[in-house]
Image (cartoon, rainbow, N blue to C red; front, side):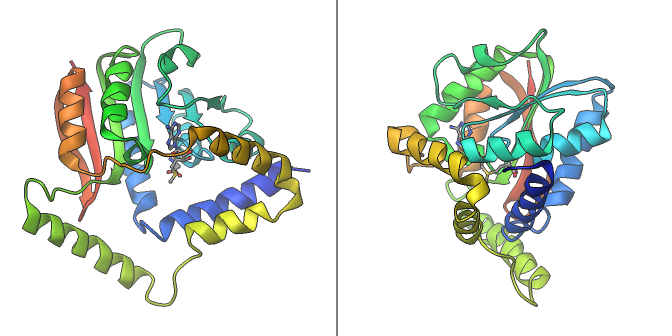
Length: 254
Ligand SMILES: C[S@@+](CC[C@H](N)C(=O)[O-])C[C@H]1O[C@@H](n2cnc3c(N)ncnc32)[C@H](O)[C@@H]1O
């Protein structure tokens, strides 16, 4: 049986696995939550896009206990983990590529902020543009999108793009000089072998077999996000925190 304790342990293991790809993950979470706090509202309404098992949503609630955080994801296993670990969070099962996805959000007013970490690059560019355009309709004027991810700039500044990756990779190598945490595949293989997760794994397999898996074309360029955000109606787009190509992108809704 999937208990609260089991879920908490697996999420801690998820966090370590994710840090293997970005050792500054906690620092980036902190910078992101600083920006939410700096908006000045003690009870912000926040949507977490591609929340996974809820690591960021949980940290947001810990710092801002009066906030309403709506974590959104399409992976049944990660949602199941999050629900078992964080009963205060109302996880929403939805695919950000589904037309009309914003209508499934339990919103009683426009959101103050949409946040996301290491997730939106999974969307192909047309899906990303549509998603940002839809997002504008549920964000209040002056509301923010805060998106932490790896963003490359090869199309505009190719030498700098290479150096940004080098800065990030060398930092990662230094942090893990004594050994890396398990990787993404090891984490998934291990959890798939646990009887407590059999049902969630089956649900996950059924969903990906039904075609809800990734398109294979990703939006990893900074310009793809900046252009899509401007087109969607965000007035300002800039970087709030950065190490190499690992950035916290901020956009302000007009
Ligand atoms: C690397 S994980 C990051 C999870 C979490 N944000 C974190 O930082 O730990 C990427 C997440 O994006 C979610 N995701 C990818 N494409 C999605 C889509 N189209 N709709 C909803 N969630 C999606 C995946 O299910 C996964 O949970």
